[in-house]
Length: 187
Image (cartoon, rainbow, N blue to C red):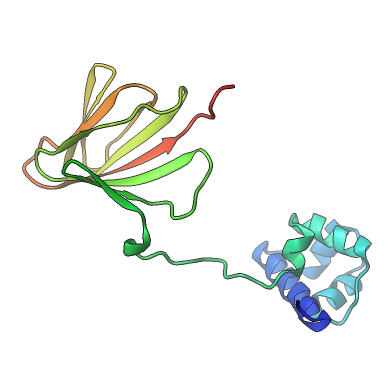
């Protein structure tokens, strides 16, 4: 358990970082919170022992929870090395997940298709949309009886709840990115 000094330090650091990240002065955010600027300054410096009412006003003005105000600060970014990202293969196609943390309703994948390689896509929940972009080479998407040929930089948007498949009709490696916006299950 953290000491009172540690929690006060966390509070001061978090308030300062959150305020500055929003590009606001102490006077601007204090006005938004409905507290005097000197009160804000004292809390942000760590020299105040604010009431619950003041903390609630501060958390409301910064649009964060009380827990986030009081918790030890976490880094704002985390680097994931390629080797840490989930990777699988389907036939000759390599699929690398690009979201290391689950995001409800969203998947992003990097597809590497050797020359002539292809794979069948799996239909998703009804209402799902897929966004396929070709980064390198050429990708052929078959979807609901239609054939779409994408060259580098092209994007096709289609219903991901239909039968579909990907193929590299070229002589070199093709790389594509798929963003899948999953529709929530009905029920």
